[in-house]
Image 1 (tube, one colour):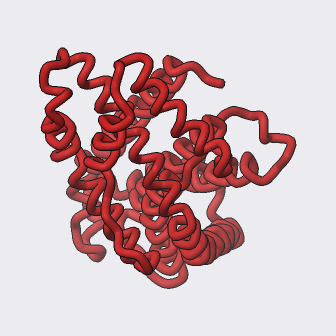
Image 2 (cartoon, helix red, strand yellow):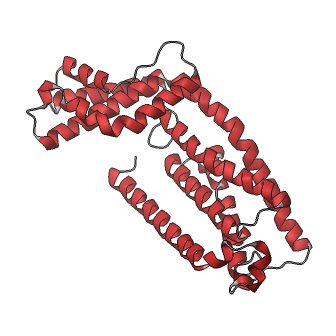
Image 3 (cartoon, one colour):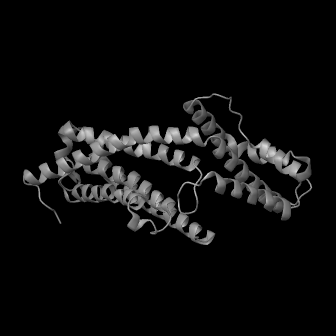
Length: 295
């Protein structure tokens, strides 16, 4: 099982990767703003046209790297489906990289098109945007389904054991009573009416997650028994209690979230197939009509 320090290092690496990538894209966007935001008819007369147009050095580079990123996204699917790759690191980390490619790839392709999207390419472009947007939403749904450190779904027995582990830690390490543990969990539990549909449940969960940072700490500190505990210790208790209540919520809503995740796949996959199919057609037509590798 990866150590917490390894996870922290990976997250730091990923943050740095996003930061550097966004800075680079912003640099080229600002540098070529006079070209990108001009009318199409006047573009050939603007400095940088031959470099920034789709067939230019930079435009071509953006297209090649963006397309490569879109292809690299498939590595997550291979990791998830192929038995050979099941031991190749945490599925969660692969998903994080998949999302990185899914965000940066479209941004580079947008620069490649120089914001001029027409014809068949427009279908691929908007499919790509739909894939990227739905992918971010899919990541949120993915996190609602309890998983182990490798990324596989956890069965009910493992969930119960994890819940007991949190309760035992609060008892033994911090000396909290069963009543206190229950009250902490209840103060951080969302209320959903019986018979609520999957979409209503998702809306309630999303709203609670958005507001949670602003009220979880206040709710817990309001518990009288925690007021006289040192701030650092109280912070640890609140963190563990939050994880316990979050686990309880995910167990209770498991069926609804799995149903939503299924619906999400039904929407996400067709857009991805359209995107890849038209990308292949676009590249094939470009080669057929005489465009060559520019490097």
